[in-house]
Image (tube, rainbow, N blue to C red):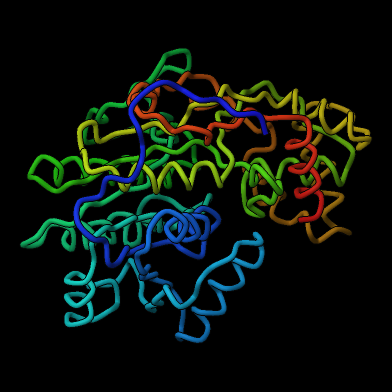
Length: 379
């Protein structure tokens, strides 16, 4: 991919003192396994990963499988795996285990969350809000531990924002957010979690909030998230040779680029500014993805969204791999979710632009999009 080099401050890691251990949540997820990889590339620290699993063996297999899926090399001698649960008191580690982890941790990167698309806020609260509360308890001990919280640009789907505005790297306003979409539980949980981080920051916890856009496939291999909304749409499009007639722009970042940015920002000693939008790239339109598919001889016909949804439901009767796409469109056959704020608005990233990220802002190229579509087709 072509590279963009912004002007700014050097982002060479400046973490004070010797870093012994990074505590990482969400390590087995799409972003999380890349975070683990870049922790190892950019530091000499050990990484302790909290994995929700019935046994240590299953947790180890889960993490190794994720690394293998994305062809990532991991030095397992530098990884400690703990079985636990964000939704449980003390992360499911017990009091002694929790305090031992707290005493040995120099940096927390909290990427773990329940990302269920169709769950309401109350179902997500235990993992996404109560779990963060426990993480903040760990960070705010006698010796505060720097914390990076992974948030999402989806917070701006809240009703007080307009789709045609520019949103800034500032604290969110209001304690009682209103979201219009029925699929807003996750976004609301991120909104409420940011509020907890802000309160902790005001009391001296060195917390950073990173709002991530949609994560597309790896910038080198194109390997992508098999559960992503865009991937579900694209997979159904490629399987059916039909595309829904949608008009939206996707603010995105390749997953590996996002992970590297997260780790570099986490390693910065400064906590002012403490909110960053990881949105340095111009958005890509749905139409351009359809056009690229056509260039790669996928032969796509565009039809109205409601009609497309009916076709996909019928096709899924004989192609079980389309079941996740059917779940996505079941309550929204006209795909009005893609008319929400985040597919229209602009995301200011001047705080991010303050820092010289060197070579890690890639422009999409035909080869990247080709690899990405091929990866989607293989899901």
